[in-house]
Length: 303
Image (cartoon, rainbow, N blue to C red; front, side, top):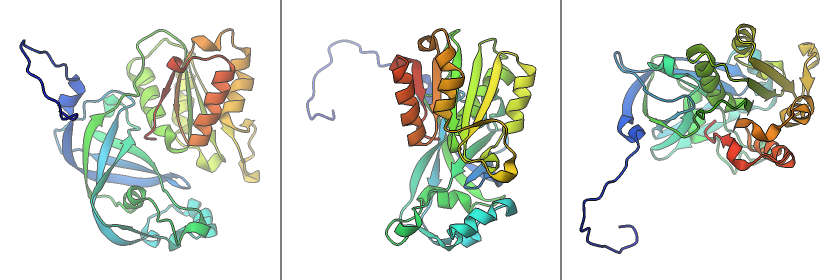
């Protein structure tokens, strides 16, 4: 026992182990593709060995093994041309990453259960602000992932998770930003492509500019097919060439002003959130001001 105490058990004791524990496995997966979907976000697609399937719930995550490596230069990354201006501007190419010992990191899956023979991740490169480059190293895991090429082998384990769809008939509000897209896609694709849910669902996504939006057409298609789904995007810093006519500002404020402030009872909705900490904090404060109970809010911290 962890406490150092021990005791005799006089009767048969039942221990409940969640079913998910027995389904956790380890695989050597193969990189199918690793492309930028936004300036600093990659969509990594991994294929499981032939005949294998990942049996998971929407919103689950996997752990990826990060091996020891040295002198991994960001100038070796394959970054699509359209994203080069910001990489040039911030001199991201100059960074070098090192990892002195094997570690693992958790990432939410963007794929939904019907896509169980593959794993899709949305990974944001973790870089220190330029003034701190000499003192703070770039992210160990994201640097490794950004360097992966098709055909490379990657060790993963899973599934894990607790950010699951609640079994109720309540209206659902999804709020996401950045790489927090991953579990949003998993949930929403499962809800509509597999379950074909009749629940009222809305997805509110915050991005900086049009270049930072991804899976946009896929969500618009769901919105066209299902009248009970609405998809809203707010851009905080739209560029002139975006010709943006949609919502501007931060997503928590747009959600409040355009919907929740007019809703007959926002305390009765289920909220699912994944995104950068400032976004989560702002949403928490906004929902608290409306009287929403913490039990109505689900968070994913592995976006």
